[in-house]
Image (cartoon, rainbow, N blue to C red):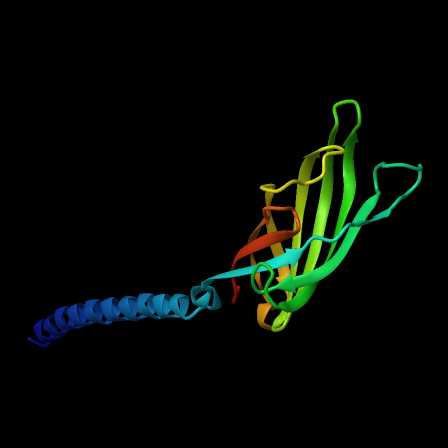
Length: 182
């Protein structure tokens, strides 16, 4: 009789153990899901920022040999505006370094780096831009690149930007799509 009671308790205990392990697994999975939902990446949101920059003639830093060659740089500094011809809200600095030059076929490529200093922080941008060598960038020109970092409000930023030369060639529109909290 003692054996039957023990066996009966064993079966009850086995059922209780099943329920116990089921609850334990369920709680573990719920905890993992909860932690995933609260992770910093889950708080990342998509943002959009649009600003305009005046186009100033670039300064050419001519590396040897004399004349346009690999390593030559075009640098610019100009105001950043909240809208085309709007109030100045910051400034930008850019550097375009010739990294590929095929004079025979009139092709070139430049490593483009820019810093946009805005009231709430700074954005850092990078791209490689392919051009018909010798042709100035004209209205309608667009290129896209990466936002690789920032400061202030933009610390931890990642995203992309599109730069478009506006009608008349006096300014560019920069549209950034980015996220924070990575």
